Length: 515
Figure 1 (spheres, one colour):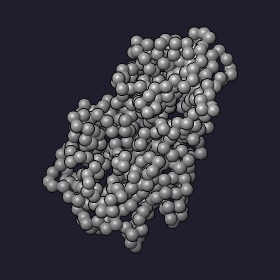
Figure 2 (figure 1 turned 90 degrees about the vertical axis):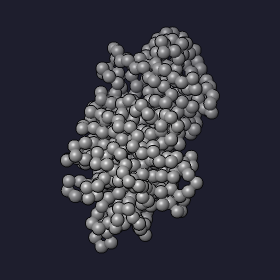
Figure 3 (figure 1 turned 180 degrees about the horizontal axis):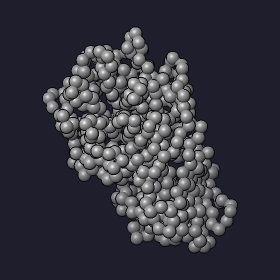
Figure 4 (figure 1 turned 60 degrees about the vertical axis):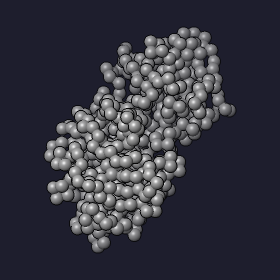
């Protein structure tokens, strides 16, 4: 993932493979200046550090999942514009890994699909690079364990084959008191171990940040695309630059026309992408960027541009594909299937959900850590900053059965039902508080609703045997949720249970409607 530490379009097992929303058609812009461009997220919502490959006529993409499980969403396309979910790299967490699932890099060779990915080791918390393989991405990957440990941190793998020799590149020294470097090494023929001594491709002598690299050979040069700056959060300043060399091991000369991609009127912090070549021989760059309108509340979205190579100088420019999508699909789950929709995700570090579907209802409970003040949340990735979520709670017990906007186990807010009381609650600054509550008059099912504006302006409503919503106003009716986003990912709406595992929450439906 693109971590420079100063500091599920649709996702998840969709009946395991049935998520396939189409996005509006796009067209290539003709503006010469890539900094003045119209952009359309081809994979909207939080999809950072994207990687893309083509095998035959089919493209595959994956991206950072961070602390959400399942890990590393997988998408498939035939045109790079319209993508459908086909599951995850890891439905279950690899045994050696504890957190921070970043920057997965897809690679294909001799009938085998590889994904080189970042995660933290359980033993010491150090980020290193693992590898997994598959004969068919839609059928999942088999983890092969750690392939690269390097000092305090090794992240952002990229693989290239040159003249029959495979190489791996990665970011090193990001946590050291020295310039960051992009390093490289030879890989074994099976792609499962390094060979020889590492070499330096590029060094961050300016100390502004350096990561998210990909490497492509064109004519007599090797072109190294990379991202300097701070990747994430409100203070990000990411961009895309390029350097080239006549040798894969360098030295690399930076392009005088950098950056290739930077801030625009509508998007910011562009970076960490991968090039892919179509069957027709055109090159494309899949990368991420924050929407200025929705900012950290929808995360770093999957963007696409065509790479145009100057016929005289050989240097590239990036022309974004199309205008913004005209519409984004709403999401509704009536829990009528035999398995949970693939768009649901959860914070695997703090809860182990126990989910059952029966008679059109979701039963939710979970095992949580003692330090988890929030509970067990099942969440959906938001695609815009303005939306409304609603559900109906079908049972009464001592557990909290709630809608939630979930940033982390230590930062969440929602409206729920507990012991015949409806309450608005928050977890903030290591403290859980009930902000407002009202007694229910019967044991009938209770409908709950939250409205979200600009990602963080919240209102809370409920009703019972009525067509009229009753608001539980907080802070003059508008609750400020600006504290919710973690540094590297968007907060997510969903449903939650907090309480004994023997006292589950029963939900009749979940509806997410964009405004």
